[in-house]
Image (cartoon, rainbow, N blue to C red):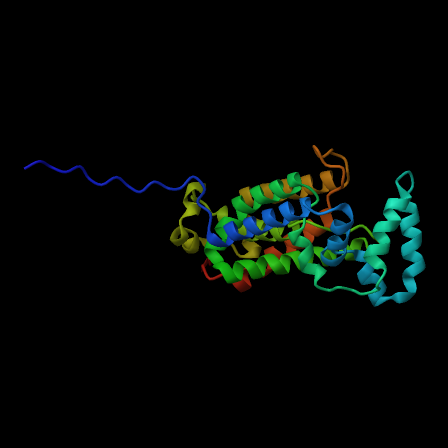
Length: 270
């Protein structure tokens, strides 16, 4: 009787992403593709409804600061196309509405395909283990609250800015911060982060002990340094003419770092 060869183990897919991340990436790509089909004017209108504008929130809270907003805009347009900037401002501020939903919806828009791809790569890398650990609903809540937190810190630091804020970076930063709480556990191999059971069993680092983890500290230091360098314009961004809203990134990061224990259903390191 011939012996049968043992069954071969199932091959892991090249991109082993959880469904929540796949659907989120698909939604972002479809929105960007749809915007590419719009005229410039229609895209401006879409931006006025979905992008977050700090000055809009400021004027809603303090209507008397209109002159401050106009003065800040005049200074920021030095050497630029003033007519085009004024047209955009008219669309963004004309109705005087606050549009609070833009605190979240700006995260679905991107300035370019390069902007989208960079966020997509980061989301796939760090959002995937977080989605596996938290589950779909908790993961999406973390992303949403980090996005809102990023917008609020951006507003606090640039309350007179009329330029729209777009991009999923704040939400992705929140997911990155959440991942830091467990992906740098001693002895963990990064290849194991594709397994749901392994990810949920990793003991999460309490915030007080996280600062003793040298790998986590090194990553956090590099993350903050690169965001500040790119955001301050000290390092040019290849193919991009706009600046990085580093305040929004940091706001999302802090929210994700602090909110993770409230949403986590994994193991806590004692």
